[in-house]
Length: 217
Image (cartoon, rainbow, N blue to C red; front, top):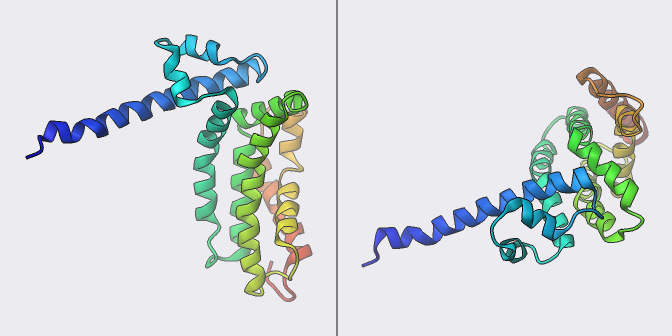
């Protein structure tokens, strides 16, 4: 007969391992954003965490893998939310508006702005960092959006076109206003009213370009 305590032991160990991993990711995220990619080392993060250096390397064998995990951790919640928003059965203009608004809320957060600036300043020297960011953030978001837009085209809600390019257009329209101003330090913060206005503008222009004939906007 299996002892209950022994049966639970592996799951408890796994819970501790996951907690430790999450702590590593949170410390690493702060270190990357505050010090940059070049100035961040595995040894420095291990020193902040304390304990054995081997613990960090057991979870993440390289700085590149750690950076990838940090981005995965930072974007997973948004991807799950976006997947919920992109409901094929919902009203298309409303769904697109919610999509644009959620994107703005994500990319105008202090962490996202700091990350974009980090990529812009160090991406040329560290192409692997730029590649990981592109794959985990804009590329994945565009893929989810393109899949949804292709379905809308199949249902006759949007005119037939390249769904990937259509997704790119909507994302660019959405981020062309307050996000760009914030990223370039032309404003210090973004208000809900600004995000609402930019989302409305982006969806209106997008539907004028891609909406099926006679579609209500």
